[in-house]
Image (cartoon, rainbow, N blue to C red; front, side, top):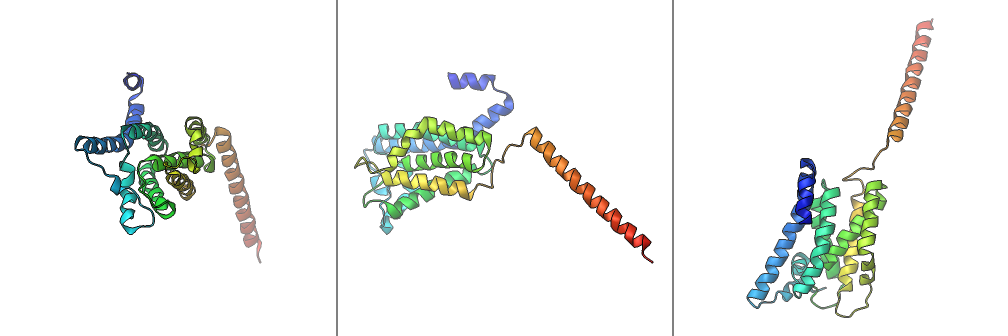
Length: 234
């Protein structure tokens, strides 16, 4: 009901942006839930499609593991962060969001394949860590006030996730979490010059215009000076 009310009072352009920001994350979640429902309905298990580190046969999990979950509770716990962090990515980084989404998914899985323990690693939690890490580091690296605010929101909502990168619980893939964290940081640096630019305030624009005016004045006077010398040359 809250979402419907929000859509009702939003401007048409804002509604369009809001729907765009939600589309890919929601589509991704629909796929995850369909897969889990198929497993449950047909009493199947797709565990073997997870990442199995350092084995060639296990590399298929780089592409598939994020779509596979142990049970509905596991999937439900991952659904909320994907929706929130995914919509932030597509809402604030719309020019580069889709490729960042794909790269975070694949690179975090590949890194897990390189550093993980010899076992099947499943679930989208590594991808969630990659999303959170990218949004957090990118906001500070870009020195953009609006994006920095997003970084603080990520800290507020998911700051406790940092404990997940340590080998505290035996049956939780802390390597997957660590892989996601590292991947997000790498992508934040790699794409620091693409996407949303730093916000410029009026006083900054005025200073730039004054600097340009001064430069043009100096160049103009320098040309007049040289012309004068040429005209007076015997």
